[in-house]
Image 1: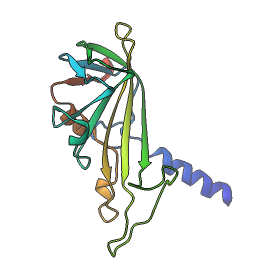
Image 2: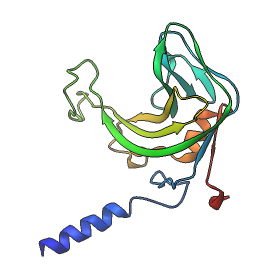
Image 3: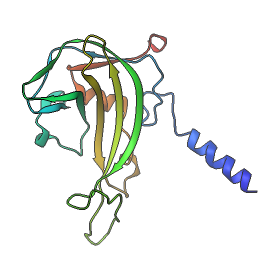
Length: 182
């Protein structure tokens, strides 16, 4: 009996991945590319730059309830760093849900949802793209996310759809599917 229940649970988990790019459970196959369409400057003293609504936004200007992406380099420098336009190999795509309790201990992983105005732990639904470009070895990757904590609205408690990621990136970065999908 325990084996049957375990097998059903495994089957349920496997069904969360979808071959449909419109699904928030889309399983990215290998072969995707990210094309940077224009130079992208990372400010001095930073290794990241944020894109939202198709625009570069300052770190403190991100509207976390809407989709946004963070492009990341390996190093922080005292001078601005510029990524050159080109095509980057996406060699890994992972998804995660991170808990963050603002103003609390970094060791705290989760809190409660209180219908009477109590604290709510925001959940960040993240899709991380690991990028590679031999001509720009300092490039690390790009993470696209949004913050959600709406237990009464399950359609929002999910990872970003490909269309939402593309809207956050705008004309800056184009995600190119494998040739087999074209």
